[in-house]
Amino acid sequence: MPDVLGLDLGIATAGAANLTDRGSLQSWTYRAEHPATGDLDDTLHRIATVTRWALQWCTTGTVLAVVEDFPYGTEHGQHHERAAVHYRVLAGLRRRQIPVALCGNSTLKKWATGSGRASKGDMKRAVSALWPGHGLARASEHEIDALALAGVGAHCWCDWPGPWLGPSPSALASITWPAKL
Image (cartoon, rainbow, N blue to C red; front, side, top):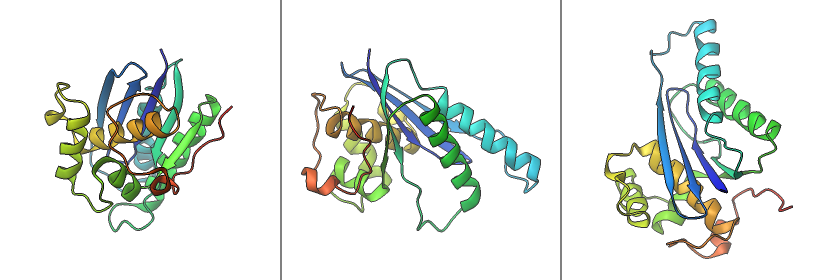
């Protein structure tokens, strides 16, 4: 069964979600076991661990992975560590020959809520409304973003039927889409 993988990547926490063409979904949250120590070996281990975690959600049916684009303007965290995770996951997806789309955070928010400045609560309400009855009230903010990423891919690249509420295609022009085969 074909699925779209959504990935909201981070070094300490991350979210992943699979959405199938029949509307079933699953989502997961990654949380680092230990706080960062600043030690090089610890940092490399954390990068490798979150990369393995993210790539394990690829299935033989994954037709697209939508990854939140690297947040260049963010003010917290270790940019170089997050970039390492981001690019290692992208390389792993490419090795698996999975097409990859990159979606910025404000574009994702606009697709899900109609506003590029939506709060985490707004995102949770909007995504929960798209998939009622899936227990998303308990989902982490990272799972919510991953589900929205999978949703935008299913809607805009795969053209799957769904409960889509997103903006016009011109509002999604900033997403880097892979070529369709």
